[in-house]
Length: 101
Image 1 (tube, rainbow, N blue to C red):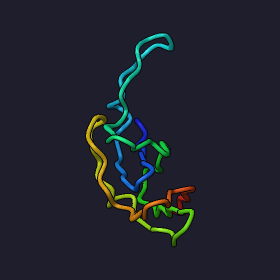
Image 2 (image 1 turned 60 degrees about the horizontal axis):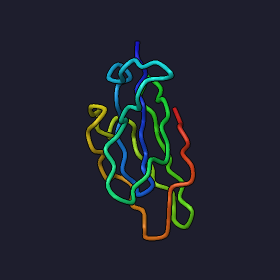
Image 3 (image 1 turned 135 degrees about the horizontal axis):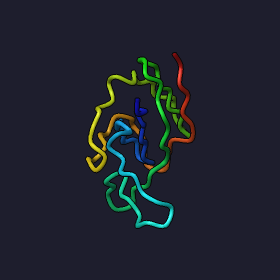
Image 4 (image 1 turned 90 degrees about the horizontal axis):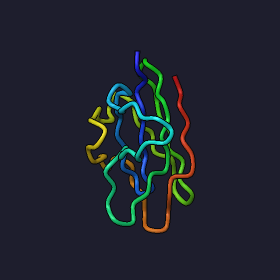
């Protein structure tokens, strides 16, 4: 079975994608686009998620953590835009993620 991948951007957008949607490429092939980002947005983290439902805790530099259930994050195709689900104030950023079963 293919893993479920979690994508997190610097401004609090997230999405899940099934690994089976990632194309098979060689080490010397062209780059692949994993996620659609807006100007000034960057990919903060890509990580595999457990097969079962879990709790995700997103730690931020200057504000309280945000807790999401993994099943509440949309399961989207590889090139789909992520959804804004984590409030991140101007100047703040996500600096860590913890998975709890």
